[in-house]
Amino acid sequence: MKPFQFISATNPGDAVARLTKNPEAAFLGGGTNLLDLMKEHVSLPNEIIDIGNLSLKEIKATATGFHLGALAKNTETANHPLIRKHLPLLSKAILAGASAQIRNMATNGGNLLQRTRCSYFYDISMPCNKRVPGSGCAALEGFNRMHAIFGWSEQCVAVYPSDMAIALSALNATVKVKTSVAERLIPFKDFHLLPGNHPEKDNSLAHGELITGIEIPNNSLAAHSAYVKVRDRNSYAFALVSVAAGLSLNGNLIQSAHLAMGGVAHKPWRALQAEDFLKGKPATIANFTKAAELEMASAKALPNNRFKIEMGRKTLINALQLAFKG
Image (cartoon, rainbow, N blue to C red; front, side):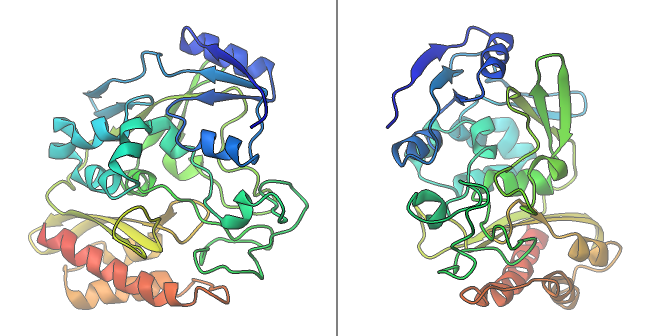
């Protein structure tokens, strides 16, 4: 691990000011991803700014929905009475991720900032455009079983690993960010980025910006939501395919569907084609199947992950069925 200076920030403004001044500095929240990257020499900050003691840990109801503090732990969030009652989809997604020990350390803001678990990204002997722009993508023609089927480019085929973020995407969350001059709100659909020609850029944060919270609007999905995660083993594994599904129903009629997929793209993949098809239609197996087929029609497999297209179709159908049953 490269030597670094360790500094504890006294408040959010102090944290932002310190990071802004040093392009090689990094924030430390729970550290569950950053420390791994540092040990593998993937990330080499010369200064660590500890934000763990900042007062950004509150979880509360607001006039328009719910607020999640950026430094609240994943475990605290998943098990909070407000979240369990009003946002069970989020609770289920968080509890499907990582292990209890990691969830006890990981923060909400840090969860959103996870970097890909692509093995070529972690192996500094291999070319990776995300790690070293312009060096190439070893996964493109390498072993790409875990990789993307939507939105990938010739520059990067990696997938985004979070479970929590998949639910937040379906819930139309907004990320609250402190900058050096003000605060700004980033709609969740715009927070994470597809790789395009700049896979080194995971999200729309500028250096020096700090996530302070996550805002989730009120919704009518609590009674009909599900999170389905398909993986190689039942724990300690990232998703091959996951689906967060929420249905707003009037009897058997779907007023709106909220669907997001994980394990399939460089960002949480909002299943908009499936959502559009289901709106105003009866909640039937036939309609769930057609919606899934429409969504997966635009998937583009790599040599080792063609199975993800059929897996994605079946997982979408399964999640919709479970959400409908409530």
